[in-house]
Amino acid sequence: MNPKEMLEWSKQVWADVQANVARLDGCAGPHDFVPVDPTQKLNRRWVCTKCKGGVDNIARIWYERGRDHERRSHAGRDEKG
Ligand SMILES: [Zn+2]
Image 1 (tube, helix red, strand yellow):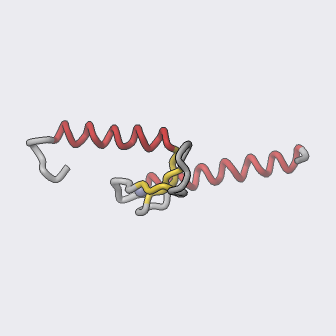
Image 2: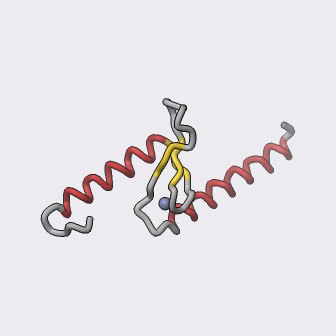
């Protein structure tokens, strides 16, 4: 890859990242993450079935943990979750 191609590539990567964030932000939520490749055990990528936004394994773990806390903090007050 020459420096010009490198620059184009990094611009493309950044554009993809921004498009992905826009998808996740626009999701009606809560995200419903499913593995992109169910046969892959490590460093899985996950994609939301609602917004098609993608996250890595670590982002998903924290998202699920956040939802868990949210559910618990609402327990007994709001059955809707
Ligand atoms: Zn989503």
